[in-house]
Length: 200
Image (cartoon, rainbow, N blue to C red; front, side):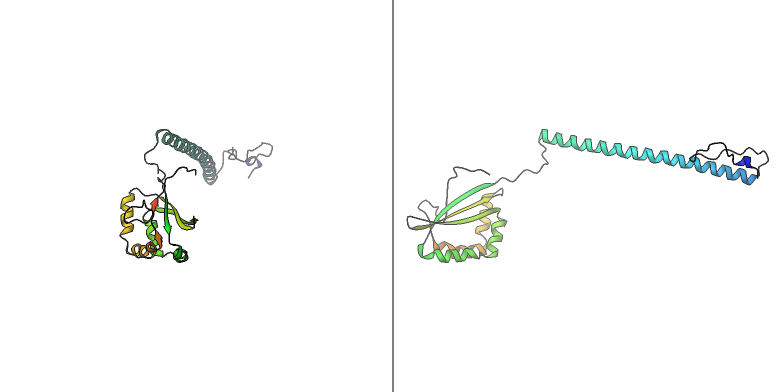
């Protein structure tokens, strides 16, 4: 083999295939090897180009998707998209009733451990943030309650609560301890108060 096959003085790029040998008498095996080597280099260059194009297309796709999503959100905000989940409407209730002086301790004891079934029904009937306060006025005890209704059919929910057997038994325990005000509706223990101010 002659040294002309691997030129020493000529600079060769390591990323390019070797220079084609110039011996006129090279064998068929050498020719086949040269062809294979040349094909591999071409294939490698094609793969690099395809890889670069793939990542470029992927980046463009991500940018377009982000722009499209932002545009859709702006449209929803501007037009008021009907599919958006609206916040629940909250109706606040303040109630008042009297309490028998000799029954204060018993009333507190009952409400220190409210029956689980009663609490469950309160939640099922869309009542939240239920609180009861006790205050003595002119020597007489009064109860003040606050709760929020988040449902859409108050009358139907109150009817459902009144029909619950566990709640009925609970009311039989608590109602005799209370003293309804003069303006209380017939059969009702509590009177609703007027809201004059509210701030979240």
